[in-house]
Image (cartoon, rainbow, N blue to C red; front, side, top):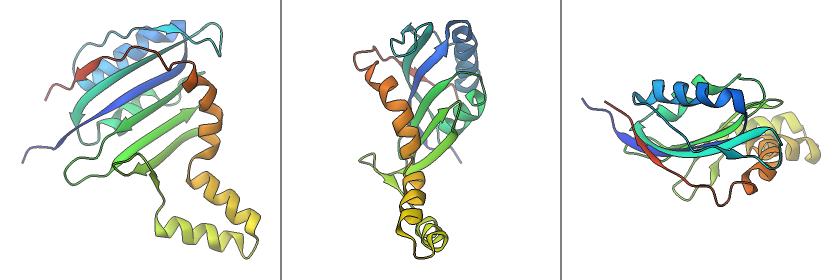
Amino acid sequence: MSASMTRGVIYIHSAPAALCPHLEWAIGSVLGTPVKMEWTEQHVAPGFCRAEIEWVGTQGTGALLTSEMHGWQHLRFEITEDPSPGADGSRWSVTPDLGIFHATVDCAGNVMVSEERIRWAYEKGDGNPSVFYQEMSIALGEPWDEELEPFRHAGEDAPVRWLNQVV
C-alpha cells in the first residue's frame, strides 16, 4: 500500500545565522533531498534570518519536520501540511518560550477544535467564563499567533521554492 502524498510550507520566522545550514541539513534529512534555502534578514530580530520553503511528501512529513526542528534555541517556525486522502491538514507553530502548538486545520485553513477539547475547557472553567475563554484561546493557538505575528509580517514578500520528498 502506498502512502498518500501531501504538501506544505515551512516558515522559519527567526533563526540565528549560525543555525541556518544546520536547519537546511535537518530539513533535507527528513525530505530525503538536499535543501538550499534563500535566507533573508529578519528585521524584527536583528542578527536573525528567515526563510520559507514549500515541500511535497507523504502524510506525516509535517510532524517529522517539526520533531526534527523543535527544541533548537532561539528558533521560531511554523510548518503546514495540507489535507490529503484520509488525513486532515495540520499546522505546527513553535516558539522558544511557548514550545509546540499543533492544530488540525480544515481545507480553508481554519483551526478545528475537537469536541473533547471544548468539553475539557468547559469543565475546567467550572462556570467561570474567563477561565473558559482562556482555555479556548490556548486551544486556538492564540498565544503562538500573538508571538509570531510580527515575524510573519516581516516576510510577506519573501520568495518560496518547492521541494519534493524522495520516496
